[in-house]
Image (cartoon, rainbow, N blue to C red; front, side, top):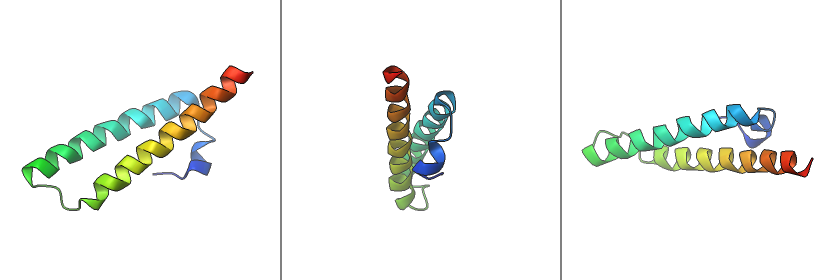
Length: 68
């Protein structure tokens, strides 16, 4: 996943799409973890952090738009 600095150059629509994809990935990882098919549980933490990073940048962008 991209860094927060790189994400700031994306549009709100692109960030929303990324957030949806990240949520879907977390869901799939949870299923794999429950069935024992997940190879690395560290990936779950990385995915959650990526989602948090995306949502943070998205909130910043929405605040910028609301301030204008």
